[in-house]
Length: 160
Image 1 (cartoon, rainbow, N blue to C red):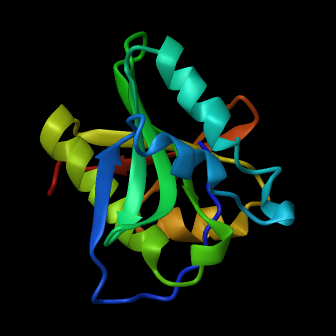
Image 2: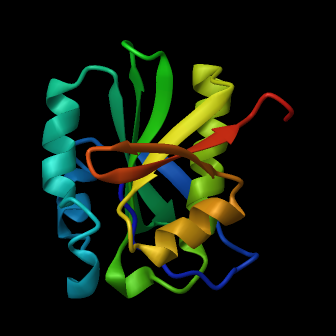
């Protein structure tokens, strides 16, 4: 799981998560992060290709109103029965506006509602302080596991 985002909350945000269709595809591929963040975030084109071959992964376009601002992907690991946020990024030109926090809340709500999951897992690259802070603010706690070189964190939804 990877992220790039810097947040300043904007309370009047209209964030929606949309399936990545042929209509959203060009905009999602154009979204980028800063050069310094590239080591933390896989390109969206790669992520969309992964979703094509991984039947349980769902790529989503993040919109603020009618403006594409980011990309997310979630999925289920049938071997462990875990639900994962696999990718999460906000475009370099949209960072610092609170879209990351709002989109993460929307993604968690979607997964809880549509998937019925009681826990959500994600991973972030060590040294990605922005991701660590954002996820901690959302309630994700490190599990002590490392997967594919990433710190694994878990959000428990059972009490919500």
